[in-house]
Amino acid sequence: MSGLDKIKDQILEEANHSADGKLAEANAKADKIIQDAMDAAAKEGESISAKAQTEVAKLNERAESSCDHQKKKALLQAKGEVISNVLEKAYEKLKNIDDASYFDMIRKMLEKYSLAEDGEIYFSESDLKRLPAGFEGEISKIAQAKGGTLKLAKEGKDMVGGFVLVYGGIEENCTLRAIFDAKKDELSDAVHKILF
Image 1 (cartoon, rainbow, N blue to C red):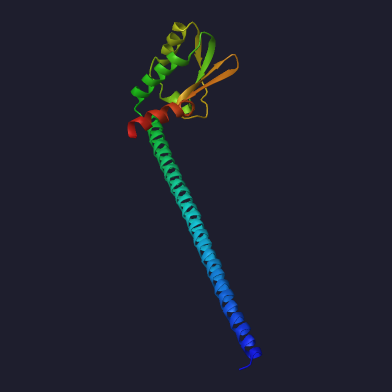
Image 2 (cartoon, rainbow, N blue to C red):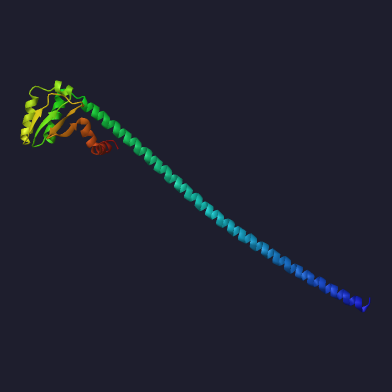
């Protein structure tokens, strides 16, 4: 083998050796790049998973809150219906009490609602027909005790239960329905305390 061939072989061997080193270095760098990318992807995956779990937890919390709200709303509505039914039954029962109890109640209402003025009292046609004997006189006495006068109107008004007072052209609606409606919140609270 000539000197030139030896030099060629040596250059080739050095080139191969250098190429192998550079190839190994390139492979090492490539492996590091791949490992770094895999580590970054794993970290990103963990971050995405953590965010997803947080979002799922928030959604579950909102769903539970919404369910609780709907339950409370339904319960409140049911309680309201029960209270309304109780009040309506009480109103119906009050409308239909016996005459003696009914007119005792009317006396108490007159003591509360009559004014120290001259006025007129109206009843329904059915109440006018069942007025107890001497009740017109009792109405006058109650009004006088308050410092006023009440004249019994001979024609009936279209109403059910209770009466209407008229002072100087101004009507004071003292029908059972009007009183129930005016005291609805107070009565509802009382029924709520009893039932719930």
